[in-house]
Length: 69
Image 1 (tube, helix red, strand yellow):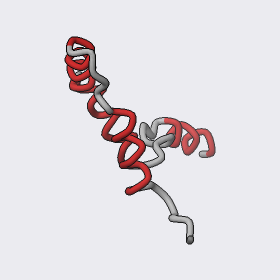
Image 2 (tube, helix red, strand yellow):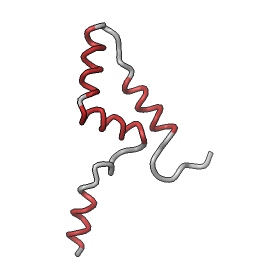
Image 3 (cartoon, helix red, strand yellow):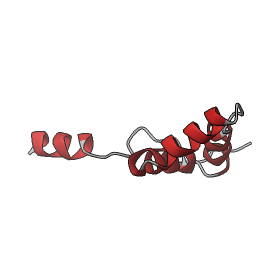
Image 4 (cartoon, one colour):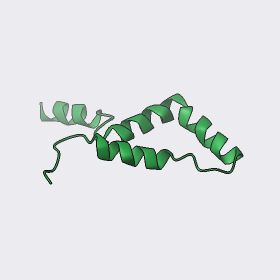
């Protein structure tokens, strides 16, 4: 029974995601959208800003309990 639960938890693809930004990053990578955007950014010698958006979305919409300020 314990092995079954451990296997189920290891199959969770969102286990290490800190927030919505990580989930969107994973979805765009899986669909190939991220590769297209990065290729376009490289072609125009401009940063795509993906990491900044991912961090901002993680800060705005984190998973789990929010810390009280």
